[in-house]
Image (cartoon, rainbow, N blue to C red; front, side, top):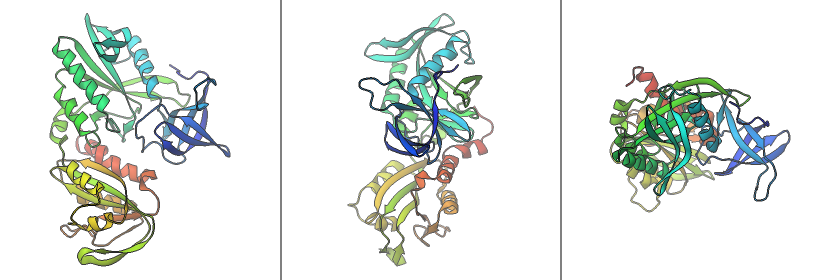
Length: 384
């Protein structure tokens, strides 16, 4: 299958000014391109990554001449065009290429049931099946997750499909993972806890299928389609609001700051990652760091009072991983602040410095993916 037979060009990613716009380098020039994907894509859209651009036919109302359709990771194209994922799903269904749904027939696309619209109405084993399709571009080495940003729409889809199931209508969600090396699929409970809770709540009512597909560098789809395992028993234990987090702050200028008993310390300009944890009410703890008006209780409160909030990334886990994460971040950082935030453990520090935005560094995302995803694969080789 080739969705882009009219050809494309390759460029180098430069920046993403907003959700639906990327700027890429072609030769010595910069091209702006429409990005049909609202996901965060932080681990994919890294500086100098190869981007596949499709030149569109000029038309009234079209703002950009190019559309970003894929990005390479480790030499493998990852499809970014979320609207084309439904075309892929339809092709796979019509050709009997999805294990377990080889005999399914597509009756209609864009099916409206009451006030809601779903991607497909299928017929399988004499039954009609209402199916929703989700495009998954978030993965580590062997584990894929969805979504990569909070999706109220996705949570609502699960709720409505469960209601249809209660009315006697068979329902399903197909997660299409654009990474051929994936073996396991999970909802991203680190990023969207509510979607993940709903995922578990409706698992007996809605059929979940996750498949890994493989795109060639010519952006043609191979016949390799693999069913991914979903470790429900592991998820039942882990989908809770507890664990660790990475607070990223930006200090535009170097300055001295008084940090409790540590005294007056000099902080270089740059970005800082603080590794914290809360084994209960993690979301509440993270929200606290977003605000300036609060009673100062910890070292991080003194730094937060003068540094700009950049982002905060949860790593939910039933295990206490804070010190393991701090060690891993320390290995990729450029400097640290000795004794900061580590008075109640044996770590030398929980605060690490970077001259550039760490969210633009591949090694940072590899570390984050390890603790969010690949650590599961390392420790759990037998699945549900």
